[in-house]
Amino acid sequence: MEFLIPILTTAGLVLAAIIVFVIIFKCFWKVAGTNEVLIVSGLGKVKTRTGGGIFVLPILQKTQKMTLENIQVDFTSRQEIPTKDAIHVLVDAVANMANTAALIHETFGFWWTGFYIIKGEQLVLGPFQGPVACTRIPFAKGVCGTAWARRESIVVPDVEEFPGHIACSSLSRSEIVVPICMSGEVVGVLDIDSKELATFDETDREWLEKIVALLKIQA
Image (cartoon, rainbow, N blue to C red; front, side, top):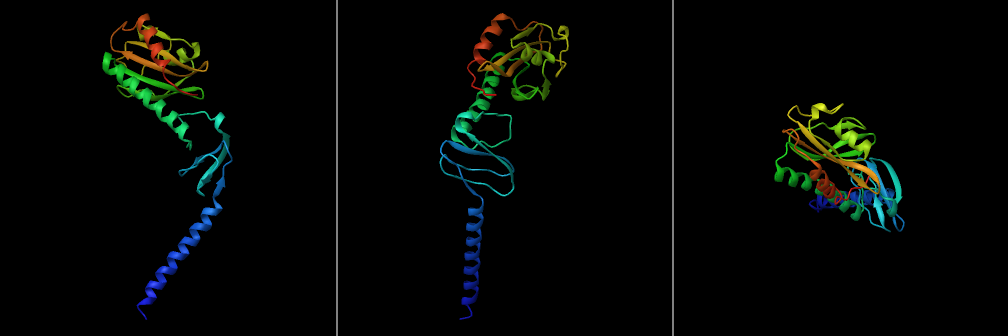
């Protein structure tokens, strides 16, 4: 009978572990009402479903309840958005910007092609092609910040003649910046730099504006 002691001990430990898990699970299970989700910021991952429940790990710091209709997708945030549709919008925005930058860059061979996204009072670097770039640009500063402030595209034949130009690279000689607008608000900019003077003109402005109009980005 002595050989049964290790078996019974193991079974007891497994049973105790299951009981502890069930207790913890019930303590941190929160019910989300119909058309509501729980957006949790902090450490850890969250899973949820509309009208169901959400398991919140004890290390999470803050929980905010929102209705599905009011969700705003901010792809510059590290906040988890546990709804399938919101995640799709989030992924599509980044994917579309990345592929747009790659397509323009590879097709025309520009020096730098990429996006900056508005976060607070700054433009934050997004998907791009080319050398290392400035990570943040203040409102109304440089060509990108000025295009944001003016809410219009800016074509710069010679960056050295543009007042307050921010030189992320000394090899950049000309530039075009096109604001990205959603629901009447600027949410980011498309920035393209060339190593040659006077690379861009009104034709570039017209067609780049049509391209960014196809991007679905929310502030």
